[in-house]
Length: 250
Image 1: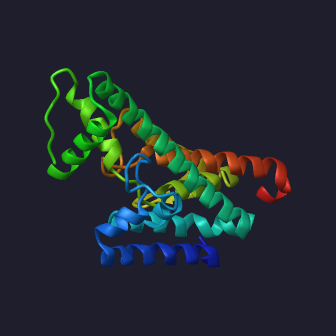
Image 2 (image 1 turned 180 degrees about the horizontal axis):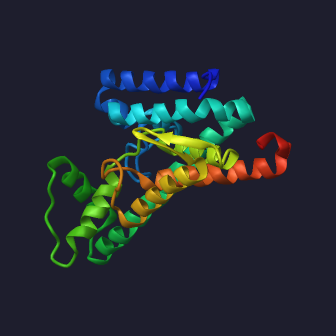
């Protein structure tokens, strides 16, 4: 979609450096730079930013960087570098915020069930840590197994990836150019951006609500995608309506 901009090129390079560097650091890279649940001892404030540059595997980073390449440069050329960076990182932060909120909603009801069952906070933490280390746990007779699994999963699974920020970029692109025809691989029929990206958003919303993934692996952070997309939509809608010459978007 045109020449790659310097900002997008820099973001691509940083993501690749983090990805390659994580192989050398091993598990320490995830421990330091992924975004952990705030009650987990691995959580650090800088992870709110650094998790955007971490990726789980080659497929993960390839598709994220491909989408950034396809939509990022065109968007930046339209709105400028400063606004593009603001949108990119705001969407990434929005994604992290909504995903953490969802994780809290998974963790605390289960945590409260254990408190009511007579466990102390220290005992709950010890129980979770032992379950993570051994890969198994003893089922409490009065507590549903799924409740325990949700608590452990929320506590122990970190968030990685630029998907939230890129969801914001893609949604902003759809707001800016809603009727621009886009093509899917292997489908030679053009689809307007507002429809294609709108369906992508609905798929993520469905995945967040139901926990079922239609596209991609089951461990996708759907609420992060939704959070990034919402920030991208609201930001670009506001800019388009109030901050620019409306004729520019025709």
